[in-house]
Image (cartoon, rainbow, N blue to C red; front, side):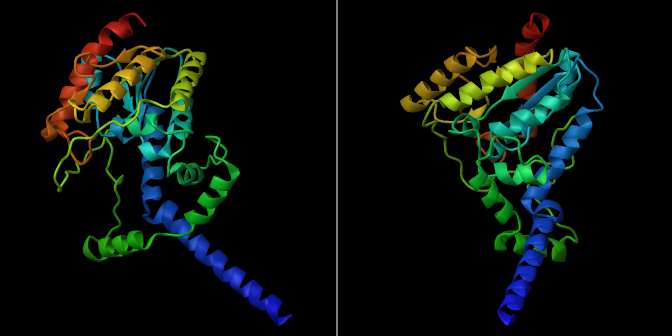
Length: 308
């Protein structure tokens, strides 16, 4: 009897601890909470925009890459930035956009190479994102991986808790990577700048067969809703002189162009050699570079929007 009571007490303590950890991770300031909040804000913004519209989606390489206001002004078409976070994976990013797609819309997917290199459409944040946004059955997450995600959702990292404590003590509030206020078109309003030295990325493999198949499936899903899918290669700070990178980027472009109209510079394949264009990662752009990127995209999009 005493042993049973002990087990019950430990189970109750563990449940309370897990519950407290989950509340922190999903609502209290863990990175998952900021990602959930940003996603839900973008959904709410998308629902206020009339169709036909341009929906830009992808990971953070879409979120921190475009200027929706510039695109909208140059195209004469409402634009919403639905970029989320690469480690969420294609299996979660693509379904999260579909409910906002309406007849006559154009969806432009900008998949960074992180997404294109996933072997099963899932990333390290897939499970946490699915659980935090209330869609655990989305994305074909294996039961074992989903169970692990459920467990880890209630276990805040020491680093995150320390950071939140310091934020509260120094700023009076908790902050996170995705805590940026958004514009009415879903763009970030804060630029995070790299403090360390830059190096040119090397693209070590082309898009995986799974990623290509999932994007091809996404085209069918978009077209079933009476909309059009376009693809755009990301701007990336990479080593254009590296033969492996050249071959993998060109192979990726060839494969993507067989799925849907692909927007890119055929001379550079969107590989950039100027690190000053970039903010804190090899994909995220500085504000002026986002404007330049969006002006270039608008020029490339205009003939495609005129003749879908």
